[in-house]
Length: 426
Image (cartoon, one colour):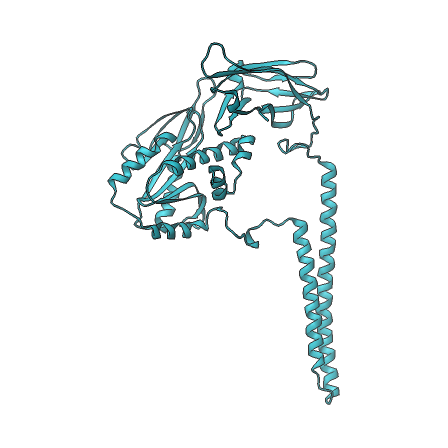
C-alpha cells in the first residue's frame, strides 16, 4: 500500500488534491503527510499511528492532535508545522516569530503550549504511560532558532532529525508496551480519529437536505400505515354481543385514530411542501450562481482560455548542473477582467515524487505592490530555477494566490485567491 493511500485511510484526506490546491490548509495536510511518511518508513520498534484526533479534555471539550504514535516506549504527540523562513522563540514564550528576509514577519502561538493541552488530555486517559512532546517543522526551508527546550523533555526539530531523538528515548527508557497494549490503546483512541472504517454508520454520514426531507416523508407515510393497521386489528377483535358498549368504545377509538391519522397526514403534507421549497431554493441558487471552476468558488464565469501562457520554455540550464529553467509570458484573453499579482503571489512546482518547491513571485520579480495583467498586454514572468536532473521528474507548475478583478475597478477582487496552471507534464 502506498503512502498516499495510508494517509488517506488515516485522515480521509486526498493528499494529491490538497497538493494541487496548495492553500494554507493544503500545506498543513502536506506537512502531516511528510511526517507520517518519515515515521512510517524509518521508526524502529512496534507502533501504531493515528492522525487528526479530537481527544476529550477534562473541561468537557476536545483538543486536536496532528499525529499520535503509539510506540512500545510510550505515546508520542506530534505538532506538525509546514512553515518556512527562520523561526525564533523561547520555551516559555506564548508567541513565536516567523522571520523572512524580504517579507514582513509573522507571529504564531507557541506549538509547545498547543501540545501541552494534547498531552494533558492523554495523561488523563492513560495515567502512568510515558508521553513525549514533539514539535516538528516539516518544510526543509525552515531554520529553527528556538531555545530553552533542550532539557525539558520536549523536542523541537526538523523532519530529518526525528529519528535521532526517538532513538535516544528508545535507549534510555525501560518502558515497553506489549503488542496487546498498543492495540488496546489504538482501539480506544481510534473512535476520536477520522480513520476510515469498513462500514460507516448513518449517524456519521452527512445527509443532503433533499434526502433528509424525503426520509421524513417516508417516515410519516410508514407511521400513517402503521396507525391504520393497528386500528384495523383492534376493531376486528370487538365482541359483537356488547353492541352498545362496542359502539361507544369504537367512537372514542375512531376519533383518536382520526386525530392521529390527520396529524400524520398534516406532517406528510408539511414534508411535501418543505421538499418543494427546498427544490425551488436550489433551482434559484443554481440560476444565480454558476460554478465554473471548483477553485474559483465564486460567481464569475471565466473563459476557458482566460489566462494563456505564451512563449513558455522549460529547458536545461547551460550554467547550472541538474537545473532546468522555466520562463514565459502571461496573457489575459478577456476585456472584462484582469489578473492582479502581489508580493504574496507564488509559483509552485510539484515533482513526480510528490515533493513541492514554492517560489515567491514578489521576491524573485521585485514586485512589492500590485501588478496587473490586462487584455492584449503579454507580461513576462520571472525565470525560475527547478533543481532536478531530468525534465521528466516535473509533474506540473502553477501560479497561485492571484486575483481576478473587474477592468472598471481594478481594486475590487471578484475572485480573491485563485490559481492557474502554467505547465503540466500530461
